[in-house]
Amino acid sequence: MSAFWAEVIGTMILIALGGGVCAGVSLKKSFAANSGWIVITLGWGLAVAVAAYSVGSFSGAHLNPALTVGLAFTGSFPWADVPSYIVAQMIGAILGAVIVYLHYLPHWKVTEDPATKLGIFATGPAINHPFSNVISEMIGTFILVLGILAIGANKFADGLNPFIVGFLIVSIGLSLGGTTGYAINPARDLGPRIAHFLLPIPGKGGSNWKYAWVPVVGPLLGGSLGGLFYKNVFLGESDSMLWLVLGITVVVLIGAQLLSKRTAN
Image (cartoon, rainbow, N blue to C red; front, top):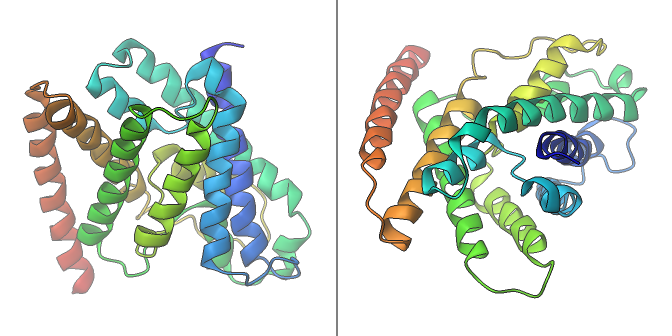
């Protein structure tokens, strides 16, 4: 299997299981309804582990554009392969969301709240404050990429790494996920959001495109900074790209702060 199709299939599995746990907890007449945040975070952690075990030997199981870009900044992944990986991840994320829709097909109609339905596919802020929301996504993804790189530098029993990464996802969700739903992955949010927009979900409402840039830009910045921080600090390899990404981050945060003030007014 090619790396491209491995990323498609791996990301599809990730969203089918991750979006699936959100649906099970949120949709009415599901046996898992109202089982809570811990179930969601554990479900997402296991989703990452299962997806990584499935395709890791074929593509490295990035399953996340922010991780792909972060690894490219460390020099451990070729920039020439970044676009194809991101396209594959987006396709897989959309397909995974379609699987969730089909699996819970009769539950959409009996669940009235449009926001609940959207929350199964895409993330949203607990408090709408773009500046803080971007920072939350940056911090979560920074720790994700830094954590994955640090885990990779340690020796575990053969085949244990994906399981440890799954626990990293659980930790991020439990500790940092309560502000924005911890997308920490542009494909995880944008792909299912596109699926939500296209699918004939009864009473689904809008797809909240005004917020959609946050779980794309925030994770990309956080993942880039995580990779560059690891390269400069952990590996001791100076890279001037760190300053460029920091500059871009400052510009994005200034824009986000202006949006936050406009939202408050």
